[in-house]
Amino acid sequence: MQQDGICAACVNRSSSLPVVEFVSFFPFGTATPAATLEKAAHALDAERYECIHLLGAHEYQLLSVEAPNVPVDELKTAVRWRLKDMLDFHIDDATIDVLDVPQHKEAGNRSHSMYAVAARNHLIQQRQEMFAETGFNLRVIDIPEMAQRNIAALLETPERGLALLSFDAEGGLLTITYNGELYLSRRIDVTLEQMASSDAELKTGYLERVTLEVQRSLDHFERQYHMITLSKLVLACAAPAAELRAHLTENLYIPSEVLDLGSVLDCVKTPELASADVQQRYFLALGAALRLEETVL
Image 1 (cartoon, rainbow, N blue to C red):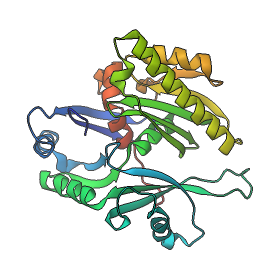
Image 2 (cartoon, rainbow, N blue to C red):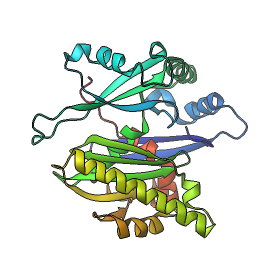
Image 3 (spheres, helix red, strand yellow):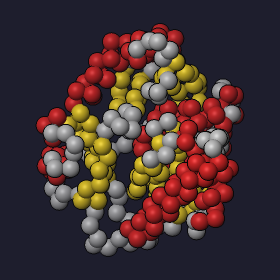
Image 4 (cartoon, rainbow, N blue to C red):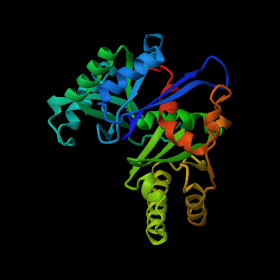
């Protein structure tokens, strides 16, 4: 769900190159999100599909914690205890899940970290009820970091890490992945609209802020995971991509390039995705649709 409507995407992963079956946008207009979702369910014949829904950037918290030394079946309980003083709401009101950050084979005895995701119970329940009432088979509620991780996994060079930076109306999201796993996530408080500002001075300020945040994040990653070499930084944004790439190229030690989803997805059925603006619109929806079931902690 975006600020102005609902994005839907369907991906078939039965072949080596994932096939985008369709992308659709349903604007809110004057309708409520629930009414718009019901309209989408009818238009898409929703009962035919399993649905993955992404939370918005401000609807959950993603926190890095040291992995508790407990059996797997006690992991979420142990993490919940560690989060009780880290959340901005009461732990009893939280739905918790965990995401492992695998240890590199050369990491030695260094501490093992993981990500914990926390969202308010009432929000999760409200979304489950809304999707059920509109006819969607809601299978997973996910977060943007994992959707972006799914796209990054298609872009990786074997045995090399990859940085992916995207922007939308909620701001920037930088992820670093290695062997298909999320190792680092950083939110950047600069929106796509700000990046595309017509005021040259303002735009330059935003570009410099983003560049500085990326520099700091890459330096932090290098200190934490010095055994992982990054191959490149990929930019997933439309209008200001060329200018941002120029700023980053001047200041970073790794090369950068602008993402073309057509290089990793079969878009024969969706020729509209040839447009950078359309790719921008559906970036996270496509990433969510690329989800593969994996081991659950």
